Length: 507
Image 1 (tube, helix red, strand yellow):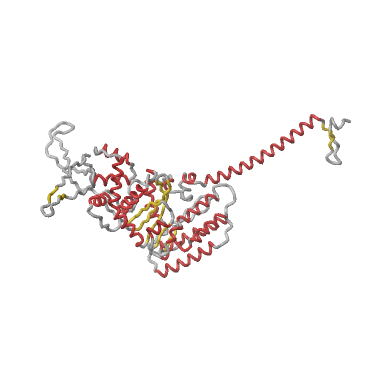
Image 2 (cartoon, helix red, strand yellow; image 1 turned 90 degrees about the vertical axis):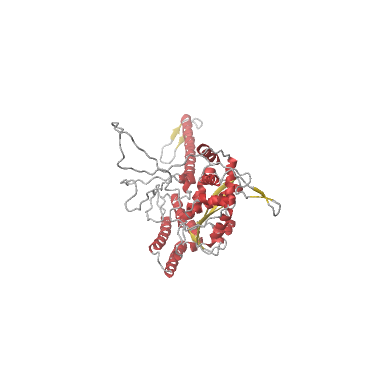
């Protein structure tokens, strides 16, 4: 029998026979046990790493760039529409080109010629060379072209007089400021191109190549500022009239000024659009523009709008649906629209979030019922509107006050509870929209300018932009020539009397 120093005898149970383990085997067994411990530790570390990577992947899929990469998830994540690359819908049966059956014609109106015609005649046949006589008919086509790009350069002769009465030297008043070298039409065109998003360098290149007019960057900026100073009284008049209208759409977005964060506000109503660029997103701008308003303000639920207590408020219901869509993405669901009832569809394996689906379906169902009723009963009386509005409000309160254990459902229920009084204003008041598409359409113009130029370098430039952009979009809304309005303002001829708003789309 071997000694204990050279071998080990093991007997796990009483009935088992003892097993002799020699030193080499004992060494191998110890190494295998140590290797098993190391592998077990590595497995634990890999499982923890896998859990962290899954969490990071979930956050990445819900982040702004990831959501913006798809047209199905961008709006759900509250991504600006400028970040979305929408795909064209694929039709099973391609539609024919041109106007569709039942739609009114959109052909371009034939312009009236204002120049001598271009006469094209033949003396001999182009095939056999025989001399031709008089034509048996004349076929006409109307061509629209531009005159030769030659600038109009002229001197301004200012007559001076010696007054025999007061013995003073007098002269005629010049409509152009001192040291101004450019006319009203050129300045109006420069400002129009500036508002269309062209940089000062591109504008200078365009006039140099197309019209032979040399402009510097400083000259373009000086024209822009002079134009803003000329229309400043009209801008202040439009801003003072915003609070007097029955329905006002408001929105705001970031706008960089001199490398720092600023905010571009827009206030739109059927007769005008007013922009305001401010360093704050707080209540100062709301009080400045909407103070004393007694109509209805349609907005996205931003808290500073609530400071206007004299007006009614309508919360943009599309924002409520965006909250639901964003939470659906986090719950492994495809985002669903508001106006169409779509069954839920999971995007990953796992049990469906039944409680959140119950909450989301209830909220969407109530909002869909309210929108459908308002569209089906446009001629409803005030009593009928108030009765249905009260009914919908109580249904919503009962749904929101339930104890929702799902974190996303509880958070959205709390947000909607704060805005419960402004959910169904459009039911009680005719003419109020349930969405804020008007303000988002108008603020889109500022977003396009921000994406092209990156903002403004100074607050003086912001002051110039908010005035010119307000007049530009108001002229488009009222179907008035912006160039004519600006030329009249520059020349001191006065401001236009805006007519009825245009019925055409504003985009």
